[in-house]
Length: 253
Image 1 (cartoon, rainbow, N blue to C red):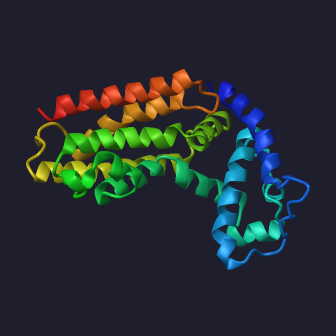
Image 2 (tube, helix red, strand yellow):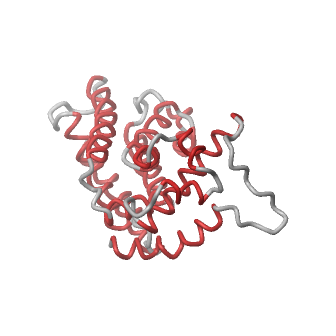
Image 3 (cartoon, one colour):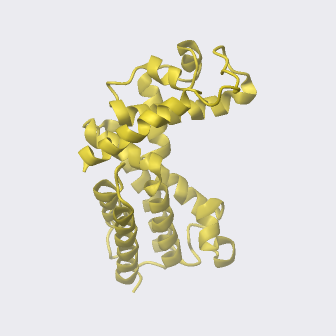
């Protein structure tokens, strides 16, 4: 799986890196190599993260230099260091966006009834914004479906292939991210138990959170790699949806 994913990453990242370098058309102005204006700082940071992920996927974390990343977006190394103090800091920023903590962002959107996750579930009408107290099964279905949407996107698939290829699946950042994301979901289960919406003898909130998300995370590792074919992506979504339904039927009796 990892080898297939990285092969796909290599073929696409070569083109992606060239585009990031600002080759464009002959009439396009060259990117200034000095410090960008504050108004453009957010865009520059995003471009650096996107270019870094492309390069990490194509060349590996160790095989990519800070100079490679800066050149991919037409910047000097000094400008890059104005945003990130090291290559590891760049990786950590990519990981924060696309790793396990991406599920925390989805969870927060659902709880607030905002963003794509909230809109998809109709949270404003269903009363799900308050930790899903109005309809916990709908909350779970929305959480799983939206998390799979995030994880099925190309950047997230590049990341999982990179981590498998570069032996980063045991990186402390991954462990910490998993603990934080499971802990956030456990807090929701605890509210359901306190509100009488969930039996208290099924297991601890943390155990329930693990039981829900572990098969979803496994589907990500097995099928949502960088070289995944459409049928593999659909298989991952289908398995995640079926697991969510099984979990709902088993837990909300």
